[in-house]
Image (cartoon, rainbow, N blue to C red):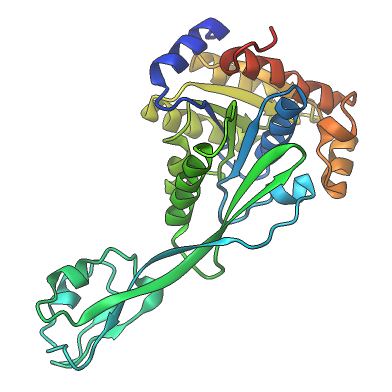
Amino acid sequence: MKSGGEASAKLLRRKRVSVPVVAVTGGKGGTGKTTVAVNLAVGLSMKGSKVMLVDADVDGPCCAMLLGAELSNGEEVKIFKPVIDAAKCTGCGKCVAVCREHALVSLKRKTPLFFEELCSGCKACQLVCETDAIKNGQKVLGTIYITDSNGIKLMVGELKPTEPRSPIVARATMLRAAEELKKGKYDVVIVDTAPGIHNVIAQALWEADLALAVTEPTPLGAHDLGFMLDLTEELGLPTEVILNKADIPSGLRDDVVKTSHDRGVEIVAEVPMDDELLRSYVSGEPLVRKSPKSPAGVALLALVPHIREMFVKGGET
């Protein structure tokens, strides 16, 4: 396993921005990554760090719910949508031919039909149109909310229902977070990614300096951890493992330990099953505030000095 010093050295070599970014991720849903992200962010704030928490799980964001935060007055995420001027369109079909998404369909020298749900907003149709018949329209894909809660800055990206373009909203959320960083001095950014290993997760991991892969001692948890470690290795992203529900009866803890050991990745925390965690979830109050001395609260708070030691100047040891 890699020591903390080795991990820190890799982080320093990788860093691209002045504010460190920790992505809390997981190969499957339900492992507890959002619980870890929220409690880590609040725990860091309780120790004096200025924290931004970004919910980039745009298909199902729930950081606000765990924080008991209200979201309102969001900023719309928009992309280009072609608006065809029938008076100028000659029906040449060039826009149809160039559209890889098949959002435009020819109608024998007539104005093409447009299927908005298929459009990716690439503007290729507008670029090839020789009669200036395709004007700029806008399509709303989702919303970004920004608020303050539990002493942290919370940013939430949310995909509009029925829209399939999750990666675009996830990317927009990360870019908006970068803009917000310019407005104030932050010590660290915690990002709650979507579950899985697809493009939406990659949008968040590209910006990260460290990934915390949250898993559980179940067959799927142990199996998907391997895929997540494949992804972070491909990205050259330093990664550590958090084993949630570590003491689940008949759990496969040894399998998770073996996978981590074989990949040279350290398990930095084991969070036990804890009824207080469920109660905090229901109440909308982070466990590290509600029940910091509970077994899970103690395990989650133990992550705080680990992250501060790696990232925050003057952090605890």
